[in-house]
Image (cartoon, rainbow, N blue to C red):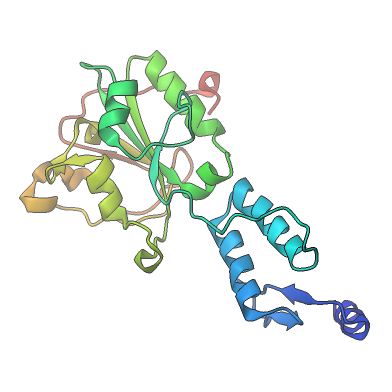
Length: 231
C-alpha cells in the first residue's frame, strides 16, 4: 500500500482510503472534504442503490458527462418486511395489518438487522414468515439498527417497539412470542405505564437459533421450525 500511495502521489492521481474501524489513519490526496463526506454517506447508508450512486458520484468527479448520481439516502431506518410486498418495506402498521394479517390468528413478532434488509439478504426471514403462515400464524417482521444513533434520524429500539409491537403503551398480541436477531438489550420488568405484559422481554442475544425468544404471559403454543422450513 505504501508503494501504491507513492505511485499515486508521483503521478498526481487523487485517492482516498477510508480507515473506519481500523487503527490506521485515513489516507487522502487531492480529494475535497465535501466529496469524502458524500462517499462516506453512501457507504454508511448502504444498499445496492446507494453503492450504485457512489460509483456514479465518483465518476462525476472526473467525467462531467457522467450520469447523475442521486444523493445518499437512508431509504428507511426501520420498517416492516414481508416477501409478498410489492415494495421492499412498509412503515404503516395499520396498512400492513389489512394486507397481511388474518383475524383470529396468533401473531409472532420478528426483529432483525437493517443491513440484512438493505442488502436483500432475507433468506431466513422469508423462510420463517412463509413457514409460520403455513402453520396458521401471523408475522410482523421488523428491521432496525442494532445500535441506533438518534442524531442521524434513526429510531431507538424502544421507539421501534412502540410503533410496531405495542399499542397505547401496552403489548400487542404478537408479544406472546417475540423473536429477535439483533444484539440489543432490554430491561426486564414492567412495560410503559406499568403494563406487566411487556415484562417478558429478555436481555442479550442468545447463542444460536434465531437470536432470542421473549414470551409474554399469554403465550400458550410452540412454533415448530426445522430444516424443512429452510432455516
